[in-house]
Length: 538
Image (cartoon, one colour):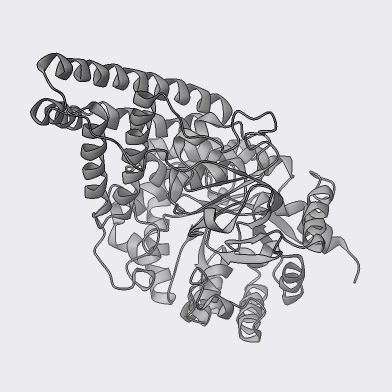
């Protein structure tokens, strides 16, 4: 057995774990056989098979939606209702029916060809959200073929007495499909590894809601791994290690033992806050006694809905989060889209380098209607507790003042509690760091996006395996910039928090505090570990 084989992909959900694997079988329909129909009675028979198959598939999607609502949450069940809408789309079904009648061939062949063509048309679209929906079409095609053949995708060991169906294991699959989500009990699953999948996929959002470490984009994963292998998964770094050595296994296991909920109280003078993307994560955040939410990524609410949310819809969501946090502050980052996160309901201009393009603060200024609606909803939610409004990807003093002015004007126009609303920038772009003193004299607080700051400071994409080694959180230049920001915060008596990978690594978290940063925000699973580390005597 070869040990410590490391592969880098894309982190879908933060955290680390180590466990044996459970292989989920890839597509069973690599070759669909075509059968000619000799007379009209056979054609009618195939049409009847098609209609019955569609009815069964629709009923399955309804059943799965109910099960997922109960196991995970109502929002996640929308995946299956969306698939049902595609399944019952008369345009596609008519194409399948016409194919059976005109080409006089079996339902399997017609379904396979029509849905594949439909899938490919979505894959060719420039909008990444629409490309992602091609996977829903592929799921529907596979499900229809499963029903026609009375087969199912499933765990490779399914049917054998030792099959755990993922319990206590890391699921390895070609892709994390909604069908798999519906058929699996995730209460004891340790994590995911897949060959395909993006951070905005349904599966990625669900993995984060469940708090399970997940890594995707490990090409040819089934050629690299065997039943019986043990895998270390780091969803924060986007890496996996097949058959890690004993020292790493013990280290990760010990962290899980030591990270008991609320065992270490919050330290005086150091806030340990939680990062979140969905309302469903609040229970986990409260269970570790977080001092508040230091980063709530609001864009995932829009991505999940697939449309622009109204002011009142946003108010309902934000208010419920603030109420559940029982008086602890909640930092809502305004829509941070562009780059790798386009909105599904908007056309984005094609850019040669979207990470340096129309995103973050630039996007907000270019779409004032979205900006104003979100600010108004957040301000109105302040009647239930402290709301911190965080502006992403600010590039300079002028841009900060422009956005702050819009925010202040809208906040003044709605009912709110003045002392409960705070506005601050996110320091992620090197240029704005040199305006920190002036900005912090005007802002209420600030946050440092350490992941992007490193990326832009050293011109390195950490998801690019060819240059990932240059993504160095220990580089002295980075710590000069962090010290400069901490000093600016101290001079203005404004709180600066650090969120991202640095805050969740014990040694680096200690260095952040030593540099003068007294608020750290991280995935909730790391809060007990970081508190323990910060409480240790030197």
